[in-house]
Image (cartoon, rainbow, N blue to C red; front, side, top):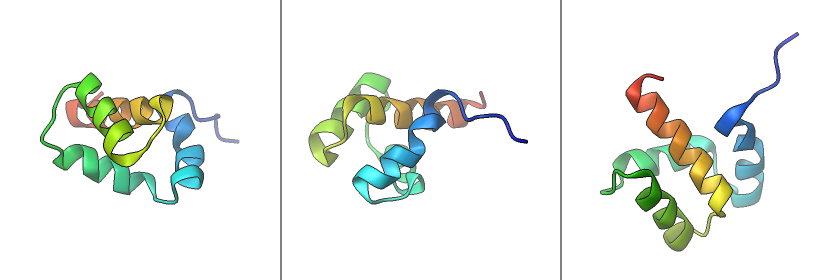
Length: 70
């Protein structure tokens, strides 16, 4: 039996359902954005793409953690 998903990834099913796009789409947007700071990226996802704060923050945290190898 697999362990339950924890942390930012636990939001992914809800993000895909609510916004109708796969998580990979959002992560690609974050990777190619001209912004680099967590708070800037979250604000950008909220204002430009209509994501809620928690969903935007989870996507940014998970994407940045992958980039840094954590």
